[in-house]
Length: 486
Image (cartoon, rainbow, N blue to C red):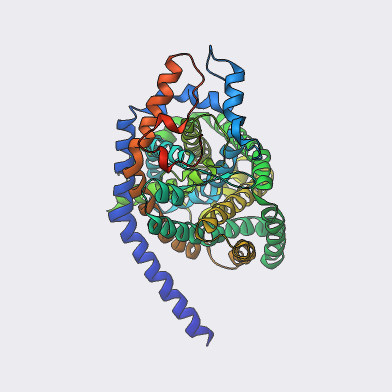
């Protein structure tokens, strides 16, 4: 009986992998590249020319010449009943989802399967994909709703309000709940349990139980507890990991130029002997890059919508910055740690490859540090993933019981992640993520004129020396569809 079940499950995994490969090769990559290039062109390279504005939003610094009172009133205004979740907290929630096992296990898998060249294509997708992140997160702010405790919104909401396609919003809501609430959780939990079990020798069952209990404690606290948790944990874990990578690079600085040359040459197959190496590098770079930075996927806009800010563009810029931080900084740290170790040509994959590389560089302390980092990275991602699922369940139904059931299902899914293999988890995530991304990209292509109209409004106010503020009357052709921004 067990053999029959295992055979059936193996067949399902094989079919899932085949569908996923076809979808990514012929549909998702084409759409992602088109959107990234098109939005970069329409925004005249906004992700590069507005870098200063991105950091200004992070530190909450007003435009020179504007009054701080003007800025404050714009943020608080008519929304005093809402528990204020600032731009940085919303940024931290989205970054806690971006900065997860994709930065550690995902990068390792991309290098293991696609070679060092996969890192180059991750960089390219991040630089252009930041424009896509801007569009989707600006739209999420524009069409957000006011809840009992906080704002909420995301792709399902701008599909309904902006495109007047409720069915499309429901489809997306179901897909993101499956992708983040179930499939993605398995990857995060699997990676975390592998690292903890390898470091401590504790059984996966006990680690899975402890992780499940901790997850349920946070998610039953609601969006406010989730945002506070993320804003405390994310900066700490990101800065610690970046600092360690800088130390490792400094200790191996003589090899740094050679590693850069290896990444670039491998990206175009100059040092590859096996046919299809370039295709594998591109495919893995784009897939794992998207899994990590989520630009265009439709997940980060759910976090962007909860921010209390004076102009939708501010949150769009902040989410663009999140893509840079995730891929160009943190994913690059993992890539350099692995490639400088030379272990990428071995047989280990995923988080164990990253762990062995760290141990080679800094000894046993590296393994301990990575175990702690994995816990913070993966656990914060599990919490953010749950939040995305809850937001979209609320779109489909107002039943409070549905949320309670989803919280219990999340706990069960986290437990399941401790018991399956990494590649099995990846196969289901890739397929679900691919379909969800297609739906979101179609929506933001159609709604992108609204995002760029908002960008022009933002830049015009800034040029006048004013702190940019938005009122729905400033976008008359969409005012009737906007529920906030009175």
